[in-house]
Length: 168
Image (cartoon, rainbow, N blue to C red; front, side, top):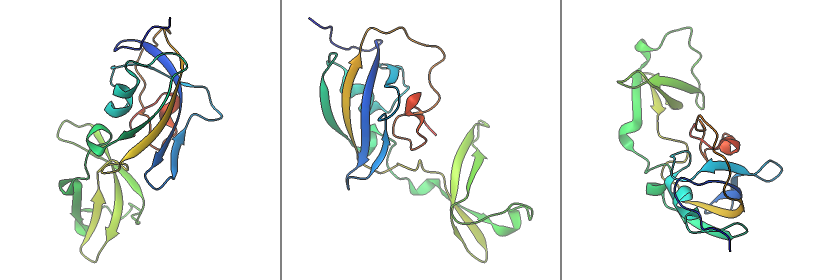
């Protein structure tokens, strides 16, 4: 009998992630299965939790609410920067991405969402914040050796980072 997956196990899965409207945002199709250690924080919580108790060959479809995905969309992460504070040489246009720094000095990605006469409005929410995500998951292998360090990107982040599945 196949062992059931538990936290700490390293496994590989095939998956397809889509939004509620059916639009696919990420998939392992055409690539190697996603390998990760369950419960190590490499993936969003809802995906990570969903594989616990499954075994090799199991298939499941899960719905991940924002709280177990990339969080709710937060208005406090929409920031207006006075145009006078934006360096002239910086090419600012709607849709352009920048990295800000938080109070700890860590980079925080933000996208320009609006430009007015007085200010540049940035949104530092994750691109999938506030979205319900649906994943079709198939467990390919269990009992694998883990790889260190942990992946730097997360499943469903739109960076095709699910190969090492990580946050963007």
